[in-house]
Image (cartoon, rainbow, N blue to C red):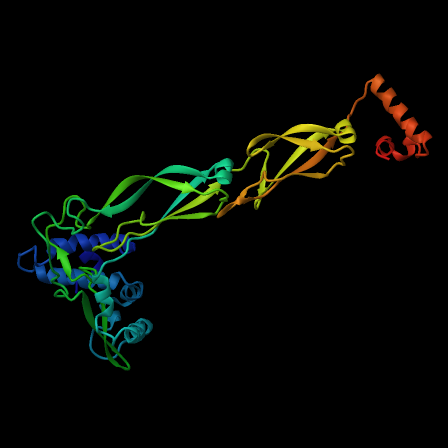
Length: 375
């Protein structure tokens, strides 16, 4: 028996994709519907058997350890290397009771029908302002669409699919396995036609017989107001096209919101900090602060304490799904104290401190200058 790796022309450490590509290439080359040379059909069957074994991690492991003898295909009782296959065997046997007896072809029949296309993910970064107010954005994606040349059939114009020679059009193959409990027949989708029951003898040159083409497409998506990092937007039917007339998958856009230099979001509220001088804190003032809508006026009440939080109502983030409900902007106040005073300033402050002391306050040198000022 020829070595299965040599039959497929791959290295012994080949991954699943390499095995699949090698099998498909050789299957097309030696398929009896295409290759009429003597021995082509036997070669085709050997290639199918090799791929069937090596594409399954468990049977491949047993083959690597024991060769063909480890697959339980010979007469007599299987050796201990075969015991690892019992779980798969019974899973296959009992899975048939969900949709008919094992071997009824339920799995193969399902594969022959229309198949929905895969969903796709697109990661999009937006600005802080776009997340707050919403925005229509244009993105560019690559996805699979039904081939316009062959209309999804996979066959060259004027030709069509033919019945698969491996499974005779059934879409499934059977393999008898001998175990200590008796012989069982394991049914699996045909590896040649992947359960369709048909093969493309003359594939479409535009899509290579797949019936699908990768296309770059521009989309305009609507980002609603109030989204945040991690929000997922679903764009229906913009994933990969389905096979054999199946529906297309969906596109999921995952959002990441850029941070703002001075504003910080917490749910639907926005936090900010502003620094004022000690005279503004004592006497009060009206100052200009930054909001997501641009500059706004903030009233500083007289006697505002360091660490106080002032509120601008309705200047926060719209609630996602209900943009009428909107949060607030919360502004933390920091008071900056002077580190140096000129003579005139010091004199005025000492007069003010003495004035407060004369009214019964503690001496400023004992309680601190600003203890007197704020007393």
